[in-house]
Image (cartoon, rainbow, N blue to C red; front, side, top):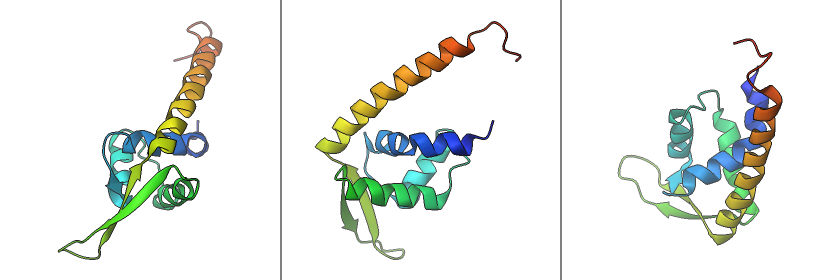
Length: 110
């Protein structure tokens, strides 16, 4: 199964989840998502998602000067983002549970 289509549907949830415990800049967030197992995720998808979540009011940003290159724009989840994360996580868990029931162990070739 091509996971790129699945990623499109859950990328907002994944980005909010990554930012739940620690702020991050674009490449850092991308690295954390890939390290978590989402290796197929594209750079442009993550940067677009960050912009969309910011515009939706779920993230705040701040700039940190860098001695090694250009300044970095950090993203932080805010109260609205935490609420959205909670709602999205609930929907995801219900969906995943339904899929687990549908697939079951019987009749599914491993």
